Length: 206
Image 1 (tube, rainbow, N blue to C red):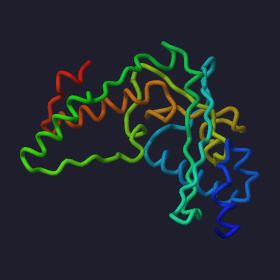
Image 2: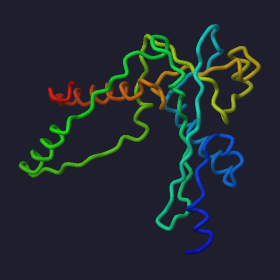
Image 3: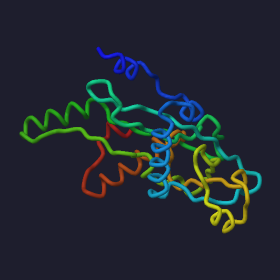
Image 4: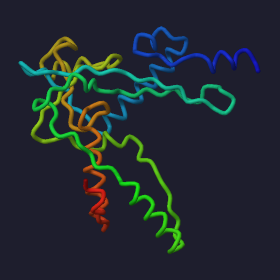
């Protein structure tokens, strides 16, 4: 195997923002960060606001992943912003976290019926699923401005601040890492399926 390929395969992903910025792929990681931030903003995940007094804003972290091709070469650099859910406080920025999952008996029944009725049964994935779900109306969730995020000067003036540390992001959606993110996505998916005529199996309600 070519030495360059070996080096590519054995190079580990950055464990944090600092490592990404010191990486030989710094520009690629910055591009991935910009793309992630733009996607979250386009999806209405947060509003940029002046930090209210006496709030508990959460920190966030970047998770980096290198997508590789069959030869081990770099296909794409991926960055995901994750809230530090370990900083959340029950009753302040999270409540119920339980999310129902499909029972294995239901999975078997689906495949049995698909075979009997001769209809295709396929599984799929919803890209960026969690951030499609709205957060709870009765909870206020704030995060500090993530590393690598630039706030335009005109926006700072508009909200009456001069420094990034005077700004927080008020979450509107279920950002990855929140304790309740799985539950919020589960509730959204459930409602979408009910709206088009599906009914939940009793065995999957526990």
